[in-house]
Structures are given as C-alpha cells and as structure tokens.
Image (tube, rainbow, N blue to C red; front, side, top):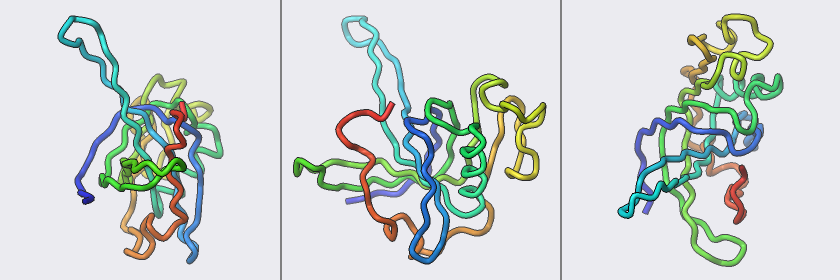
Length: 169
C-alpha cells in the first residue's frame, strides 16, 4: 500500500538529471538523490545509513532544472535541498524481487554547498528571476502554478525503476 506525504530532503544527486516528456508533451526532469545520516551504534562505532530517492520535477520547475543541468550547475554529486510530495511504490526488479522505490515529486529545489559549487559562472546572484528565485549562497527554483494534471503524473511515463542493484553514486 502506498502512502503520500510532504517531505524535505538535503542530500546529493546520485546521477545527472534526465529530461523526459510525457506522451502529450509535458516536460519532467528526474534524478536520484542520496540522503545519508551518521550515528553511533550500541557499541559506540560510527555507522552511516543512506536512503536513495527518485525525484521528479514538472512544469516551470522542470524547465528551470533542465537549464541548470544543461549549463552544468545541476549534476551528479551536487548537494541540494528538495521540498516535495513523497510516495512509496513497489516494483519487481530484474531478478523478480519485490523492491520499494522512494519517489518524490519536487515542488522546490535549492542548490547547497559552497558559492563556487552552486553558482558557477553566474556572478553573484544565482539564477535571478529566470529560475524563480535567488537565495544567498545557492540558487533556488520553485514550481509555479502549472502543476500537471493527474494523467501527466509519473505513472504515465515509462516506469523504469532507478534501482539497478548498484548505488548510482
């Protein structure tokens, strides 16, 4: 059974964003995102756990992220903040095992990390009005009112699970 919830993530892109289109021409941008946490186990040894999320952006946010990716500012390894809607989905992997995909539909994305990492060649102000907003050391982009109709949701796109057995990082 799938659940839907609001989620906020800070992590790193696991692969370069991929731009796709639905059969009726709606653009979306997809990427994987690794979110790690460190903790001490019962014996005091430091442990690290990483969860992988499949993130999809639609509409104006997708257009902005596509431009950012084309210009090299949104790529594998970049640290980002993502706010969106979270949903779990079960699927069968190539070996017939039932797996769970952690899917996020992004409403907002902000580049994090150092100023040089997130701004690149854009001097001083991030992406300005073209991306939706500029924010301090990084650029932010928000989805506008052009939310996709229900038939334009990720279910209408060729369902290809991001999990291929190996972490994409």
